[in-house]
Length: 353
Length: 230
Image: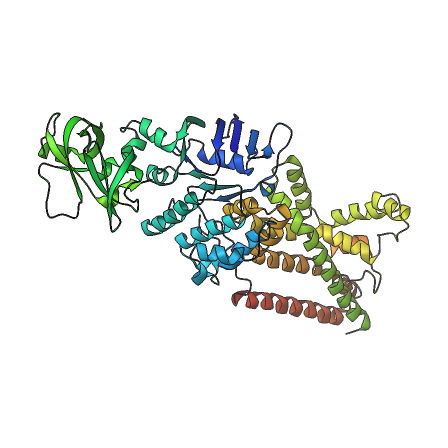
């Protein structure tokens, strides 16, 4: 079962789009790219909100081809936008019932299970316009799922929210991803994509410049590019050797890393170490909350033009890591190729998947 | 106040109520279409609807009279279908009033619908709401204030109508002689006392209606729901 999208738009005054992709279903497809790269145009084309010529086929259903164009309300694609778009005069329950009223497949009890799943039971009788931005977005996601869409379209749903609300919603989305809901997640945040995307599309000027499993796309992206800088490196399939109270220890080729994860000994995980989360020190601190202090050798360093940062490439027992530090810190530590230092990482900063 | 005066007042109320109801039934979907369509047809329709705002009422009335006459398209239609002719009849008055008051209903509705947040409409659309559901369940509930303003303006404008009514309705007691025409008759007959009485009734009526609307409004019954911020 796949999603096939071929969309072309070339006209003055319209955002250009030229996309031809076959995508897996049942996973979260991340769409990453700078603003103006055509991410939203692509979603609007898939949803039918914008009439863009081409074909869209989701599993067995043809949503549009040369001869047919299903309007947005007949496509089983619910969309959550950056602005929640709730009916402000209705309650939380009223908003979800609005979506249920169009969903002929809805079984009785769906409303309550959705309210419970999204932690909305305490808010159920509140008017939508009395909720905080994060709560509204949570209701918007619950409402979209009440439509039981074949594809859930998410257009920068976390942009503009405060940190706490963003973290809460990220948890909601990660649960969605694990549940096997097909979603297309547009975001210009590499951090969000790192957590959510199974399959990643990178867009630029209306075209897809890279498409593949998220791991593969991340691994290929040079760490100096925005994506890699935020994402750092991915280390795949490291065996878990220990797990005490949710602190897992993974080890591969003598590289031993501790991270907050539920994975049990005997299993393997892939981990991501962001360059921004790695700090360097010449002697490891023994009394510190930072659980990882890994001996590394500096391989190379590069600083960005007009930027106060230096990206340091490290060799950790044969595995490459990156650290992004300030130029001032680089001078203080006398960073140069061949020097041995310790790379410090908080266990909480390392994500596993 | 004479029986004729009361009859004229009653007829005015009947005309304004009928006209306003028809205006809402036509105006709500028409405004919705006009706001959402970018076609040339929408522009043309918008211009036609706005015409009564700039033309003298006598010009509108004159053309309506010609159209409703035995050689006009509406008159021909009436005789072909066996219906009573529209000219100099109450249904004819209603028809003329609808045309004449249409811009006063359409324009506030268009402004109301245009202010409904696009993200609310887009999200609802992808949840399965078609254009009709979007109108009835999203746009109208979010434009209550505009609907009230449109109804009040449509009603008040019909009550205050004179030129069109005189041209197409004539002056038939109990059938087409509305309050504004009755006042004109009193003045023509130099019966200023009767003209005063009836005029005062209209002034008081207008004050009461407008005060009631503003009071109800002030209490928040028609408070516009806040649109979620973008």
